[in-house]
Length: 380
Ligand SMILES: *Cc1c(COP(=O)(O)O)cnc(C)c1O
Image 1 (tube, rainbow, N blue to C red):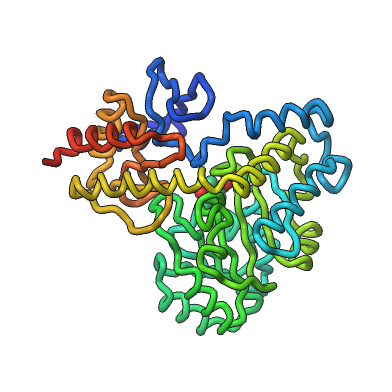
Image 2 (cartoon, rainbow, N blue to C red):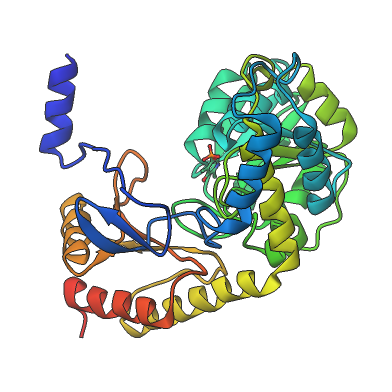
């Protein structure tokens, strides 16, 4: 049965394989023996392999060792964990925060804890798999609203008498790069007495000087807004977090199973996340460089007649008709020294090339990308 499944995937061009790089994450990567310009990383600020965070990680390793040895609730946490939570809370403007081992763990732990079986979840149809899995693990009634549709969300909220109500959206959608109307969703949540849970995985370190989507939309925070994020993308490290009111955080400490039943993050990783937040706050020019690269890339793609979204985000998809097109284009880009992956079902419905920009890219890199795309997509 497993073999037949793999055979079917293979015939449909949907078989996935793991291709490890043999070098640090960065502007270029070594893959399958070739040095490629890297347009496939979520390390948007180029922090992952740099001294800014690896130096702090080394220091923490000397002070605290590597393995955490236990869950946070036993002896697993060190003082750096608490320090990181205070820093995240200050960065996100909340009373408190809680660190998880990954963004995935944060979603599959916090969502089922917050959406109890008496409650209801309202989730955007394009939400990330970790949100979908968190919703599935919850005993709450689940509603999926059409991508970005405030009217559909309002309709569903109106029709439900359940409580608590939890509305979940990504701020920057991970495969499309568009930005949710967080202000509009927030208004609906207020009107229907719902909690708002925003996944800022691709907004943290990117929007509003890195502070994320709530700051970007100038939304005053209150106890009904829960911000989720990850240290694993623009912050270059590893781990996830929830930033929220003190009560919500205390509740999660007592109910989020991925926190309670999993060993804490290693101290060096926590130290790296601390250093990354300090760096983003202290170096607005790096976030500005990322945004200059985003604007430059989108401008060049538009000149090629490629439709691009109008959001200031580092994810720029190029939609194509078929899985075969996506694989062909990605392969031809590789032959031109560019790694820009084909994203296929079931991750997305419509196949695409997903370009991720970084502050490390030069103008030349982006020019080479657009010139290569012009050749392989067949634009004038
Ligand atoms: C990557 C991602 C996550 C998971 O974060 P990790 O730290 O990589 O586990 C969660 N939500 C969204 C929207 C993501 O893109």
